[in-house]
Length: 233
Image (cartoon, rainbow, N blue to C red; front, side, top):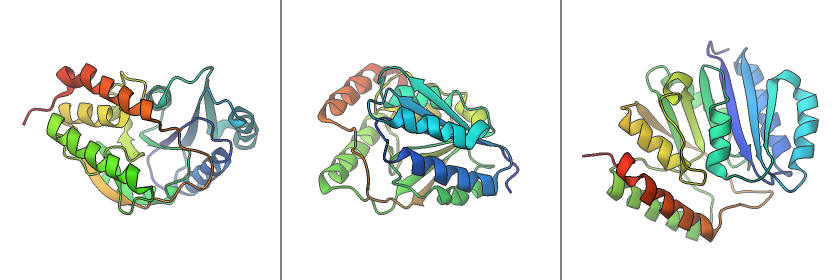
């Protein structure tokens, strides 16, 4: 058992086919490794049966599972803001509800969290279609050139924070720019970041919510936050 208490956060939007597995996997892993933990699911206004499944899970896992529901879809960044800043334990971790990561690989992060403010994953073999991998490569290079943020896989949703360090940050934007925003603010706060490889699986159920409009929203977020978040060389 690790001595730290642990908050596991996952945002969910129309993940009725995935939410049961991600919560079950998280509970099984955390129950074996932490005496004090919580699982926070933020249902971001799902229109499928995600809310119903979450109700069933709340009954099954009782005080270990907290479900927070947005009455309407507010965006990935808004869901993460709700979840991350509702967390009450020493360590705060987040991942997506699509089951594309191996929760057990959190153990690889634990030896580093005492010496770093956040430990973040990068997908060593990304299981996405070629177009998404190409877009991710271009985006990472673009952010490096624009903000001088040298991170291998900005949008990898497998990130572990010390809660006290997380509290020095904020999330202003509501969409998919959130990973970049958090890392830029961490850089500006001189937080220590460690990167580690993580396994990435193909999505086997449900559908990705990433759309062309998200690219436009990200560009708007970049334009809005650029004067505040540019990391000087």
